[in-house]
Image (cartoon, rainbow, N blue to C red; front, top):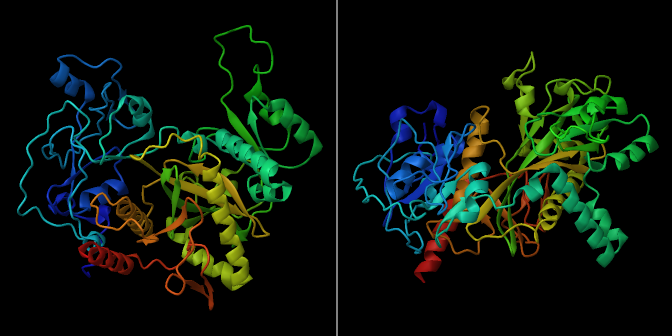
Length: 527
């Protein structure tokens, strides 16, 4: 095996997974609330040290002699919650690798100085522990025991408003990220921006927002939906819970009586105040003419990184994948989830599901397929439309999201193509799955997450002016970012793209590119 080939986490020995090393003045201390690819990336990254988690109540007893009020444990994540100072939000400790907590003095606001070698990070090798000198334990009276926290949304919602974050700290999720990722709020914000655009720039410009199906929120817009339903008899609609993912609670229908049980009692006077009301849903006009490959429906998962909302700064990852249904598409059986839902969490339960048959395609393979069948210009138009969906979606919440320089967000956009090659926005995920379904999926997500850390650059090794870092291309920086002529082309069948700095589905030579930018940045800093 070559030195540049990383052994996937699920194939490594326990010893190699737990090996650590030190680079720089001190290690970057991280916490992680997930037990999947991101934890492999963080543990395998040179110069990064895991801060083990503890039960928050135990920590508070150590600090204050009593449990913090409101402390509780998430049964979903098995994660301790923080106290009012935000200093004790914790993640589960790993029973295989629980080194002593390390860190610097509490209250420090200096930038982390650990000098992590970029190319080494991508090699996939995990350095050994020779020469390790533990840093003295920190005092647990402020939230200064970590530099980077890949937290879950529940922890953030309970702790963000009472946390003090130091200058150098980075944390996943903006406080009200749900403004874009809850299905009902996403549509509400897009509609508002569309109306504002039409008012200021005219109806023609408003057509650039025509990328999400006709949508209503239920129960609040039920009567409006009924009027639309009666105007379009015979079409198929799809119901989705506003705040769930992985295909949970989704169903298709063609008759109003199919949702009678769902809405029963909600639109009549409530005499029993204890009676539960229906869960908030969105109802959308189902796209009945999806683009099919091999007779199967698919959607495209695209990764978008936002490091700031004010000004808006957006990165787009080159690699993604198309997720295929396991069953050939047909409108004859709208109750069959294996036909209509492409979520892996749904498809893997199909009786004849076989992950080796190719239920996922890389975006590179998809782009090549579409180019061969429809030509480079048609594909260029498709991917330009996807760029428009990404930026319009983020602009719709730009003034609403609580911007914080400590926060970042990695979204998973789900895009569907119809048989006219028009891209449609299906939904936006705040926590796209990082659990790998196989070797190729693991390698994609490992590179994606490693390059995300390179973009955040806690090691302070880049210049801050880069347009590309590994597989991430800078798509928007307070305005559209243009590609550098001549050296950032995406060539497909002899035709190249040299305008927008968008290379979704293009070749991702991330390791070579990382070596070049780190070498260049080092030379610039020396001068």
